[in-house]
Length: 442
Image (cartoon, rainbow, N blue to C red):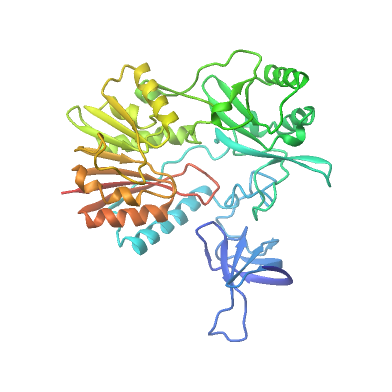
C-alpha cells in the first residue's frame, strides 16, 4: 500500500456496505472503468474533491475534503470529530435514509447467499440517535512525542487512537466528560500503564472499569475514590482478566442491573458482562421478538446464545418452559441467578459450545419454538441441527447480515421460509446492521 498525492474530483456512484462512497478512477477508455475507489464521507450522486489516494492492488481509498453538490440526504454531523474518529461512518447521512441503504444491503446479501426474499419487511426498530450508547470501550494512550494522553476510539484507518474531547453517541454523562477523565488519568502515578476504560450503565449508576497493567499506589486509590464521589461514577479496577475486576468506589460494590419494565423484570449483571448497547432499542427488540415468536403456556422454547437471559426471562413469562444455552459459564450462572430472583422456575440454562453442537447433550431435544442470537460468526453448524429439534417457528437475531444470509440458506434447505425481516438500528450513525428474521415451517 502506498499514498499518492492527487487533486481531482470524483462522482460517487453508490454506497458500500461499510458506508463509504464508491466510484472509479477516470481512464482514457470510457468503456473500461478505472480502479474502484472507496471514499469516506461521500454519498451517492455527489461530486467530491480528494487530495490523496491510498493505493492498494485492487482498489484505492480516499477522504472527501469538499463536496460540490451535497445530496439531499446529507446532514450536518453532530460531532466535530467525525473526520478522524472511526466510530461513526455514516454521521453525515440522514439516519432514516441510512436504514433504506442498509435494508438494500441485507436484501442483496440474502439473495446472493440464500436466494431468499422476505414475504414482509417490517418497519425498522429505532431509538435515540444521540447519547444512546450505554456500553463502550475507550482506548487510553500516552503519546510521548506529543506529551499528551489520548482518549477515544480508533481512527478512521484503525492504526492509531483518535484524540477525542467528547463523543456524541455515548451517554452524555460520559461522552461529555472526556476532559475530566483525561485529568483523572494524568493525576495517577501509572498513567502510562492504563490502556482502556470500559463503560457500562446500570440502573444503579454509571460504571467505569479501568484496565491497568501496573499496581496503583495508595494515593492513586484515594484520587479514584474522590473522582468516584464527585462525578457519581462506580469505579472498578481490572489488573488482569474479568475475574480480577474489583470495586474501587467510595461506597461498597452495589448490585448492578437493568430493568425491562414491559415484563416486570430486572436483570442483574457484573462489570465486564455483555449488554446490548442501546437500552431503548433493546427493549423494543425484545418486544418484537416475543410478538413474532408468540410463545404460549403450552410451548417449550429454546434460546440459543442466551447470555444473561436478555430474551430468556421475558420468554419465560409467556412460555411453558425456556431452555437457554450459552458458551460463557459466567453468563450462564448470571442467567440462573436472574431467573431465581424472579421465581421463574420454568427456565433451564446450560453451558455448551454451540459452534460444535453435541447431539447427546441434555438440552438437545424437541422444542416448539426457537430464538437464536449468535455473534458475528453466525451459527452455521447449528443450522444443520435445527430441523432435528422439531420447531416450526424460529426467530433469528443477527448482528452480521452476511452470516445471517448464509445460515438462512441452510434453513431453507430444511423447509423453512422467510416470513418476516426487519432492521434493528442498534448502532445509529454506523454501517453496522442488526436484523431480525422470522422463519416458519409448514
